[in-house]
Structure formats: structure tokens, C-alpha cells
Amino acid sequence: MRFTLSSLVLILSITVATADVSAADEKVNCQKGRCSVLFPAKPKLESSKNNEQYVLSEDNGKKGYVLNVSMFNSKINLQDEEKVKKALDTAYLGTKASLGGTKASKMLKSTIGTDKLPTRYYEFTLDDGGIYYTRHVLREDCLIQITISGPLVWAKGEQAQAFMKSLRVEAGK
Image (cartoon, rainbow, N blue to C red; front, top):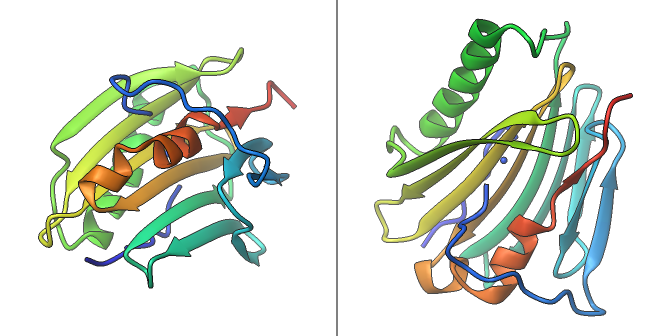
């Protein structure tokens, strides 16, 4: 099983119940994306001028959690449906390419936060039988992506789903 990191950035499986957060959880506040998420342990930070990525790998890379924020060079008008669609389609195509061309088996559209930021949630079944769940959240200045990747039983489990459901995005600027 492989753990794939996408260079992009994030909805949750609505069929799994909300999990409790344990005292060992590590809250990450990402300033670039004005968001936070609870990792089950301390993730590794990889940062550059336009990107902030937090990665936690388990079981020798067979399971993993990622929060990635990619900043844009110019702002996107979130009221322009065509531009929003184009930005989210581009993020999807980047994720698909990073997974070797695998198409999403499931896609849901929704919003998040009081600003009702547009989001898309995708499920990909990998060639090795693993699963890749990711949610993309579009802000006017960045794309936030939250991802889990690993065996299906683990990905549907309480800890992995708690991570996906822990994403919080701050309102406005």
C-alpha cells in the first residue's frame, strides 16, 4: 500500500459517526489558510512562500494524513461560479494526476463555515486497494486540501474520520 501526497489542498464521509478527540491529538493552526485541524499526533511541516503542508505518516507510509494550503498569485472571485468551478476542477485534475490518473469514485459538492466557502469531497480507490479521501476548500486567496490515504478499514475508522471532520475554516479576513 502506498501513501500518496498531493501538491494541492480537502468532505467527510457522512456515513461515519463523529469521533471523540483524544488528549493526544495535535491541533494545527495554519495561518496561510486561516484554518485548523486535529492530527492524531504531531505532523511534519513543509513550508514555502506559497505553500504550507502538514504531513503525518503511519505504519511505514501505508497510512497518512495531510493538510495542505496552496496560496494563489491572484484572488478568485468566489461569487463568479465559472471561476470557482474552474479552480476546483483544476484542483481535482491535479489530485487525479498525482494518483496516476485514477478517477474519483465519488464526488460531493458542499460549503463550509459561516462564509459558505465552496468545497468538493472526493473518494479515490487506488490500484493497490487503498483509499484516498480528500476535501478541497476554496478561499479567494488559496486552496485548502485535507486528505487521508491508506487501507479502507483504517480510512473509515474513528481516528481517520475524526481527522477529516476536525477541519475548521475561519470566517473572512
